[in-house]
Length: 550
Image 1 (tube, rainbow, N blue to C red):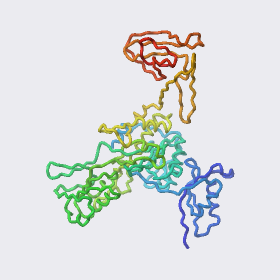
Image 2: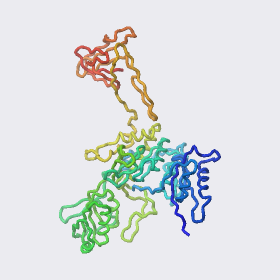
Image 3: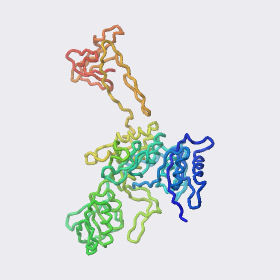
Image 4: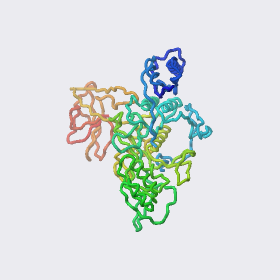
């Protein structure tokens, strides 16, 4: 007897189709699944509900056999389904970067918070405090069914920011559960920050190219964990290494072995330091590392442009490298190629942060090494920096929407690196203070030309856009005061024009003031040249400047 294999699926349902007899969505979902298992035998597993979603999507996730999935498609309210997927994890000067100079001043837990602090593996709920106000876990956590459940719960709990250092590649928006769930979060005015991934820098290698979320790339910091090799003279080659041991100070031969792909030759040089040139193929650096280590060589020096170099330099084997590059993924995104991504860059290079004490950090020979802290690199480290900035901005500007916070971060970012050159991949950003001072009001000027004869009045009307507030100043043109601004150190005349309705000819200028001084006034309204009579204003003889309609 062979048991039929079941898989996990995310099921989208039409909420309007839920019968009134059901008191909750979960009871409806359970009833729908129970009808699929009514006629099954012992070889067919029962359809099992995993999560019932209330906010992130309308639907549920379940474990189903192929036959049960086909039967479900005929159930009332069924819309669509997608198979559960595994997401890809994108795994300091941080305090100064985000503008934090003090660790004091934590406020009380917000009244709006509806969440909870749950105990879990190596975690006690008593550890929650004013800084860590809640904690939850969702099964393994690295599957789309779990992630939707987490976003669904975050919406219920009333969070302000969601930070996600993982993603899925090559899915259209309507097939991407993360895109759909984050859209629901954005609708609830929750800011969502995501990692861009670490598989670049080739074109089209980023994930999370979702238009409504912040997509964060990883940049380097102005510090490194340096290492040097002495060539026996006054010459040194500088690079980086994270070897946890104490390397011998004795001199060793240094031998260049090109691609380091001949293990038999490497074994003949067991007492030497081997230099390898990375050819840049998939897994070529990993192969070189393994070959040098198992050949018994003293140490390895690797010349590479790999963006995942930190995976190798943090090693129990003494190795050294240079020409390191940033972990970066490049657009265009698969789902939205017309949207420029990534949005912004944040620190993501060898970030020192807390680490689970029961998970191995490193191994030196036969000694295992554990720690409460670890050094990691990638966009998984960069994304929380941006999320932290967003949280601080929300606290400073509680009236700002998620879109306004995202706009403030992006429009105040610095496109220049520490060498004074443009950042080609993505702009860095300047931190909380600069972003908080940015205005979410954008001003656009328009020149209005009168095409009518005689008196006129133009009145502006606006078509409202959801989520935006717009005004026009002035909202009416016609009987207005005019200020003439000189282009040089000449007279500035203030003229006034009344309409024929007021009993004064519109073509007769009335001088109210004539001043001889050097003056330039700043205005933010409609403009026209004095010498341009299309608007019906007569230029003062010999005066050239700019007319401002107030």
